Length: 526
Image (cartoon, rainbow, N blue to C red; front, side, top):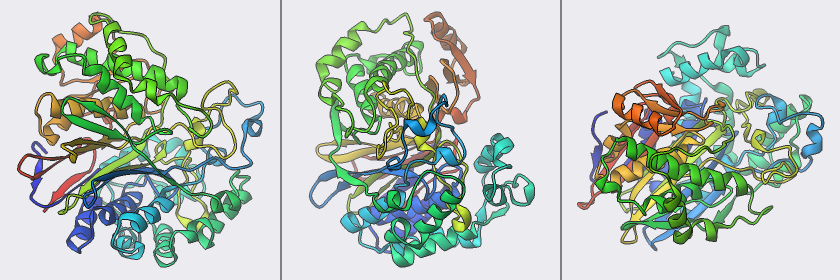
């Protein structure tokens, strides 16, 4: 796609075209943005199963047009009550895959219920219809899913139950073949018929826990029964004429705000977009945010995070003044997971929702819980086993979360709704996209299409490189190397850059939607 899709009334963007179509169907049926968003979320859990699913977490950033209120729902799960550092005594780290990586309760289903009860107009049964149909009747498998299956084949093909679903017949599925998830269809049907509690208190949750306990898993029925997400206040900053909103910790959203506070001390508009100075400045501002994030980010119920200081404009000005325009700073960064799906919806009344969901790594823990079809996240594997680390593993604790949906408002109303997948790449891609739209006047699709970069150890890899797409001018790459960046040139539209989506509401009230060419998404407007 080379230009934004324009809607006159509504817009849905997501990383899979079938999910976008499902959201638009709900809008046409009379549902609002929040109803449509739950439908999109559930569909992504079916048609984008390597990235997200019922066994994962999600965050919601919502704007209600009726009262101009912006709210956040934290749909992330906590570690089990019996899970602690002692559980892994003698081990260097929590494993990334397998039964001992599935140690946090999935928060997604609870969040669907909370969003619909507080903001929606339709029932859970109504909005889950498209997801159930795709799971039961199948859908055409995409190249994206096939590629991730190939990349993870060595371990995925050996996982009991999981391999039967994602490697049917012991082979890698072909692009375009019909992909079924019958067990998942039954689980979604149970949720549609009996609501949230069947997952946390009832038959479905019990089936998950029974399987885990049979396999020496660590979560219990009480862990599921005690789970609840919570409504929290958004965090924000100003950037030029906009107010930028993010979700608060345990999300890394404040990194995106801090980066913009730093960049506001520079005249980006006078700087050539795509120049070495442009890429260098963005990378250095983001590194400063990562440095602070790595020291403080965890569950705020366990550690007081100094957001007042971190989001103070004076603090950002000091950081900006210390940035060397000709020299790259060295900053350590932990490896991050990658499997995430970001989407956004705006309806005819102006209600807007920015939401993101994840299993953490692609295919999460790799554990499908018995005959439920539910693949469980491995988000808890990011906890540290170092007792002195801010994100150290403790019972009933939420981990440091990479998920960070965003929204930029102007004159009190949403103007740009945006986000991306990609672990540590999320604040980086968000910063690139929002500055391209605000400072350089690009439409969403152009902002997403322009060459991107990602620095650091994202996607589970140990790299300090500044990965940059090969479409960037060779002279620019050379200049970045001369500034001290460890530049790694990657493909023209490289998957390491994540899958970004954005909606912009222009001065005429039209809705411009952009989706990432690196994914399988679509912008659907009406």
